[in-house]
Amino acid sequence: MLALVTRPVEQALETVVKLAARGHDAVLSPVATIAPTGARWPRGTIDVLVATSARAFEALQTEPEFPTPETKRLLPLFLVGEKTLEAARAAGFAGPARVAADVKDLAPRLIAHLRSYSTALYLAGRERKPDLEDACVSAGFKLTLLETYAAEAAEWLSDEALDALDAGAVDAVLHYSRRSAAIFVELLEAAGFDPAILRHIAISEDAAAPLRELDLPHVAVAAHADEDSMLALLTAESPV
Image (cartoon, rainbow, N blue to C red; front, side, top):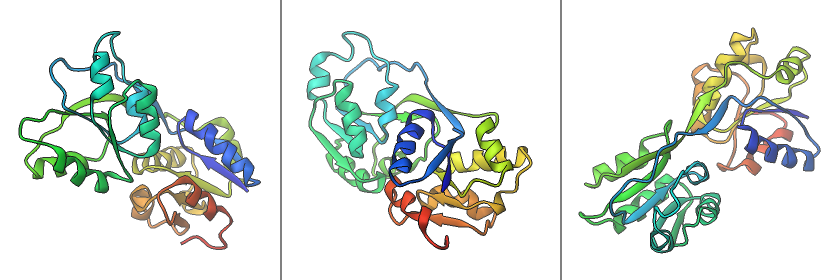
């Protein structure tokens, strides 16, 4: 099968390897480019460091001695996902880490740890869902925000993707977020293709929302919010 992968290039190449291991081919058309914002670590005391994506650490720009080595060694971390933990360690943050499966799981752990005097720095993307911030505000806490990266929308689909679409060779399109799915549909329609004729596989119902809003007939959602569950749907007899 031929899957159209819409992830940013670095992640898309990882997906290509997984697809090949399952006997599938891929065509890449990243619908967004991840770029650092240039935001710098704030001055002052930080009590807790929070991140929900590995990209937050990968895009983080720091000075040689700021944050200090002691801060990196001791600062408690509240994170979503093992990949985010790996990125934190790679960036030199060695403090005790609490890793949750998702924001819904992370929020109560973070709130239970915070005190009225705590300063929690949230490394985040410019485009994000407000769930974690809203949960903290509802509990009487406000996160200090540092937007380290932004997702810049692509202007068009790749030539390789357009050729495959024109030939009717695409068996499924893989969607990893609500925003990327919405961008893909816009780019697809701008190129003159009907999204209804394609099979769409989304990592979650949230990612599938723009597709559901269009009432597309061939939308499948992974049983679990991970890529392996998405790829398992490639050989499913009928999408749901």
